[in-house]
Length: 504
Image (tube, rainbow, N blue to C red; front, top):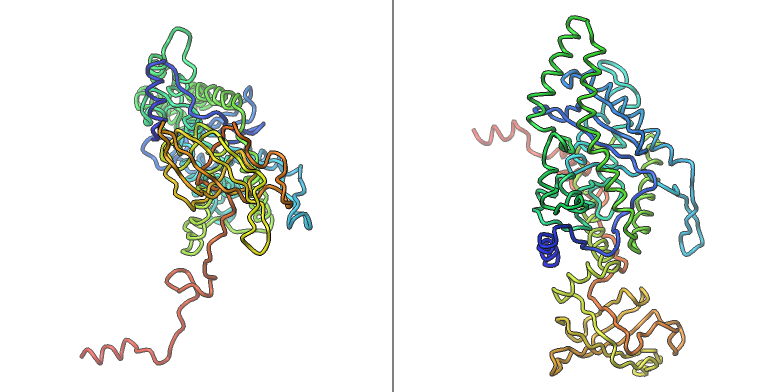
């Protein structure tokens, strides 16, 4: 938790309402997201009990498993979920857009939009991952076959779960995490994991503080948990008797439909409040303006969706249970690069995020007090445009001469090299910078490319410039201990018999 977030939490307690910690929205909210609220049975590993699914606020679809211990019912639930999920995914196949590559010389194609899955909390992401793993390897023939749509569902659920691990991706979002990225409440991060209490802090009812509204939202009768786990009291006093009545009806072959309808009504009452909260949260996020880099990251999500769709169309195998050593290293490297880029992009898009870096000395904001926009450096073989500017700031400045800085407000290719740092008598700091790049090809800078005197500007060590990927060995060059080719057999190698004779 950063210093500013801690301050915002303290202010939330004083004001009685959650405080904004960003000026823009740092994730994409699709026009037609698929809301997925799963429930699981207590004491059973990843045993689905019910789910409410849909992309229409006024038309939720409820799927239930009357007896989660029954294998046939569980996979009937999976087939029903596939019947809702797969057509939603396929509905994005119709629109394709051309994307120029290689500086406009070539063109590739990708889908113009992509599906987005929204779950209430990180537990929903975990259920998506586990349920995908339990369904993507199922056989559609032989012993215990499943519906052909079930393995396909498992592959898509696994794809969404893997995308959720990618920093900056909006393919699968946990709503509690999406909200806490933009608001700070007066409760602990653990309490923020409950969607009803979190929303109560953000939009408390008239006449109530956030703390009072959150306390009321913790009533499991009025606001049931957002899953995937259910409330223990509900399990013992309501769900268990209803399931027992259904089991007796099945055993006696009487009133099965009635008992199922009763069970469905009970589970619907647990899911409908969360359904309403999910769409309330979506509306809150849509009210925030999107950050400048959000469309770029969503384009990367659409690229990933296009690639995975092509992989499925080519008959690709289900995702492995465990990645090989080199594949895992490459994936980790990609995620580390993505996390670095994501952090920089958020800071560039949002002054409130950049403020955290100002506190640590990685950025400063000041006023341009002097400028020499047409300065020419003729010390080299060719004359070059090298403007100087002086920036005076009250922020702590920890950079030293020779450090390269960047500004979110200046052209992306422009760099500023620190020439000198001087402490002034009034406690401020004067930083002299030499600018290079992003000013055109002539010896006169293009308009707006050199900050003018009086402009308030931010400079930081953070850079969103291209980071080259790491080099990893091919499979042929990977040792067999890490998934490479098998070790060659040598005739001269000692055998077990040779070793036995030597030992004896």
